[in-house]
Length: 257
Image (cartoon, rainbow, N blue to C red; front, side):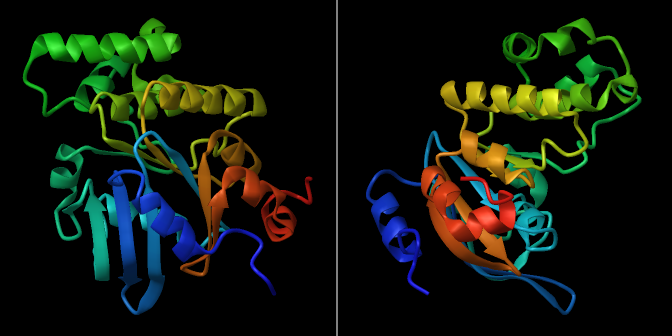
């Protein structure tokens, strides 16, 4: 079957001439015991991009993010953050270098208040004034969190908890934000709100690697995308190219044109 998007090697070579990538995975192989979850994953995220990773359940999307953030270690390959090899660093050091991870299921601290949850995102910051500045930005992005700042995180709605999880990551002022299924379990109107916020954050300069089951929404907000199947990247291209790809439409977009 002839390629329907630009070959991966060509896209990667062109991207490498633009700028030093914020994030680069080079032939990464990750295992869970004897299960070979990632089978030579390579991808690039340039400064200021939203890049989406789409695929079916079990394809390796979440494992890719967990490998980047140091929660699982690859047996082969490299993970580079602005050219620095972070492959074997522990998660807290990866976070300190500027990788903000918003995991699937949000995983906020339910007994802490909204404010305390946000402050946890800035645990490495020692300047109270800087923490206040970051809080101001998060509250501007998510006014609902300002209204709920004294409320325990566990009493928030699902959409509000997702806002809180993203806000906590923003408190790090990350070089790149890893987002795992931000629309999961949310009503359609809240999905629109969350993706509108992601677009707004990107316009303010936040670089994002997005894993999302809702491929239609992901490709609307992303600049580029990768399709992963059984631990391998099988397609790569601009969001527009992938959205028009008949294979992608059939498998992930419900046949949308």
